[in-house]
Length: 369
Image (cartoon, rainbow, N blue to C red):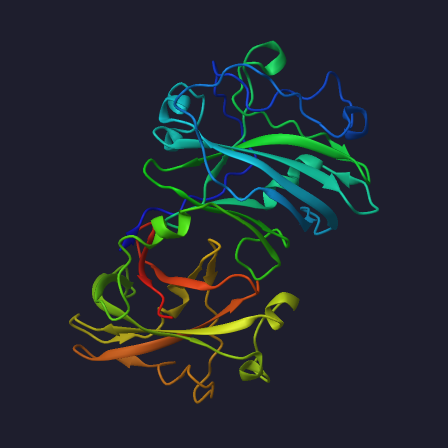
């Protein structure tokens, strides 16, 4: 199966989506802080919303998480998801947004943030930067930061109403917008504590009912052959037959003594060893170095990149290293193994994807159980 293109998380920008009733209203007048706003934070509006909007069955509720800011400072917060609403392509049609967003579908996430720690949070509006909306093809929704509209913000379908700072014990309620390609459903919402997606930090997940079933549809089965675009060097890209051989659960003890760049959560995580076989159908030798393109895709919506710190004769049960520093003659095959650390006890491998050379998106197999 080919998964649609990976949509990067947008940097702080501005887009306007006018002429729609509010999913959350504007911040209170002036520069008032969360303490002055009270527990509600944002002002709710009772205006009728478009009939084209759909409530998605996201598992709502509170999760205690750690927010990491751009200075790598950590703050204890509680995020309570209230609702997730799918808009329509019509919402984006007249938006002052990048051309790449035209034709995409906005999703409006309403949630509450509470400072449960002892430190005031500066730039509290950045708490949502650690959130990701994951599509059923493991694309990530692109954050659309909304501005403009009429006085009072009544035209904004989903206004970011976070205060500049958040004192201990204070809360605010807000709404942010994510855009997904048309036809892509929502698998989950995730929060990554370290501020870096899929780097092994603590993860909180809010799944969407039916998301896994939609993600499963059309996945290739282990053993199925998929032609994968391989970077053969010197601007040469080949399409080579590839197949998923196995996904094996390992033990942290397997990695003892290896020179691995692991953070604290990864050291406590569970390694999974993913083996993929490729056949060289090209006219010349190929260097075996494609394992870093393999992604372990989880039920929670994460893409976990592999680690390949091998030197020759590294011995890891279930993960051979005999492919390292090898070239593959025409007509021969090679099986490469990569290590993927799952750091959330409640998350499980679901599929294996490969990021192809010179083409956005992934090809994917269902992970064997």
